[in-house]
Length: 219
Image (tube, rainbow, N blue to C red; front, top):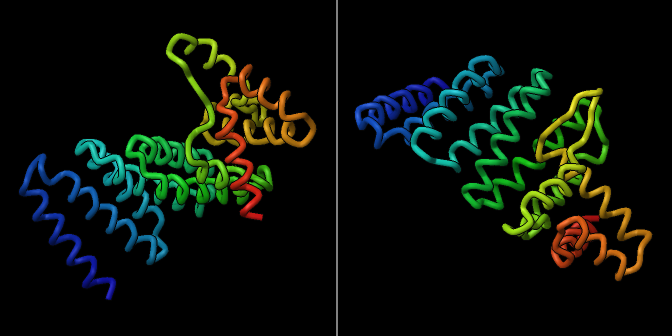
């Protein structure tokens, strides 16, 4: 019964409110749950508002898993309304929070949703596949040694893509373009050249190889 569920969530929200700062994470979850109920009713406007409240509360509580969860749901709601750029910003926030929480399962889930959003916007038909593969990698293949941080950042910057004449500084595009670049290397070059390419671009060779192996297993 959606009405009963809403009443229960609102009652729980009132309890968490009385707890002050200690109840912020729980309060955020209740706001997010109200957003889910609104989405079930088909009211994405209300759900977006609830998700944003949930994100703010979870951020205040330092709950990165909560931030990732509700930012991902916000991205889904915005995608349904075809507000793609706003959706991608929400997904990027969700991915960032999942990484801070070191939650690989959540990272993979959000990455797939982000890929579907790109596909829905008719951008890069292989987007979902590439990003889902990246999310399942054991570790990010990019390396940033402290003594060469600036050089590594410069090497990685070239994978930031351009879309419609506007620079898109998102992790999604960086991963997608990196995937395409190293896939070309693995397809056409020898193992020695692959290692050299990884070294020049501050990539861990074993992680990139594992990334490709995971991709092969999924197909």
